[in-house]
Length: 364
Figure 1 (cartoon, one colour):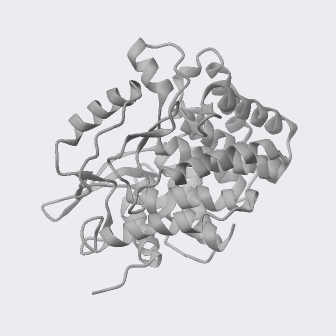
Figure 2: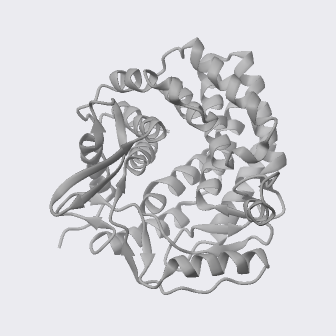
């Protein structure tokens, strides 16, 4: 039996992105599925293209050469920029320009300023995750160009995340501020946060602290990292959803191989750089979960697919809603069985984050 290593997922990510690029639209597909032995690509996405490109740029910087010219991919992405209405996606694109580095177009900055201004009239219209991407893009852009306008917006976005989404008592980020919207939905968005909010929040606050020399931001990132590690499962699972007011797990499933392999390690590795505290034990525990499942169900080796998520065999949608309600009532969630089956799709953004995280280890 072959021995699993992270080199395997790096190779699968490079191969997978080559299959998922839609040359006619010059964007990456959202998902790839196998049906009756045929590859089926579903949709295209500016967001997933921006994330995939982050991974490809990082990969090229450490010598992992695929068949892509990152400048050509970026040009194709910018040809569709007028379709972008989300300031988080624009932040991802700015992040790409900072990594190349290549001076960003003036109209990209105008779009960012325009869509960010619209948010000030309704904070609930955007997830924390998307503001975290914007903050990261701004922080890296300031590191590259030192523009005062970038610095000003970065401070504003940081304060918005701190004031509306971050809960210092637990160290967790809520999905959204909870302002506006239907009462039940608003309450859920305010009390609950996905793993994505935690990982990208830790990463964004760490990069912000690093580039703006802000020790308080580093302390907030550290408190979030410590809380996340304290809530890690016994087998290394990075659980899916959290009650940000109680600091407890709200929903354990589904689990995502990309979180175990890349997204959380990416955040904790960056946190190590700014805090000096080691999180290698927790990172390795997360990797050990993937090693256990990689040879059986998380990865389809014959078709070279890294599945997007793993879920229990039980009717987990029902369990998910019950646990969400229990968590909003500050009650403990049901413990669902650990035996999981894969969702039968792969997402291009997962492959991008895998490349980015693995390359970050080689080139911080």
